[in-house]
Length: 193
View 1: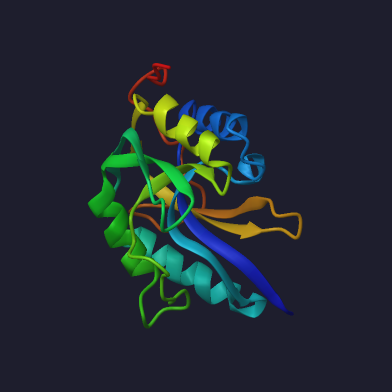
View 2: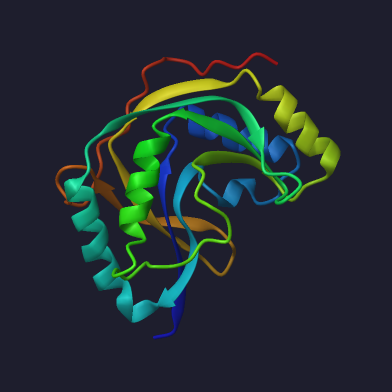
């Protein structure tokens, strides 16, 4: 059957997701429109395609034990010079993200893997672009804020075209497919340029 490249993440809901995706594209990040705006739980991971049923069952179990939690984004950060990334900070909800990603990457589970760097929840807004554009992303989104209740996470597959597509959503507390829309606490994103 071959292999597939999977990722697990918490979606950044509307209107914030589209706004940050458009800003990322505007900074010159060519991958922006192929990557839904998210907080990574499991980075791109190549697995045998015949393990998908096992992976889905594992993710259902993790989600069933989880509970919704508040996520608040505020301000920017960077991994430079170690990695060419500018991100929006997870100011609240980071501990819950860390716990969930640890459970998803359980050493005895089907998505076990080592990470290149220690886990740090964030929302990438620029990756691998010119330094001047990275500086612009860092400065222009410094006042960005968003808040919502995260009600689950999703499994994504990267296509041969480089685009990430959602395979299935996993709501906290039930393990059943289909997540209700993540509700935003604020009507409009806060962004002062």
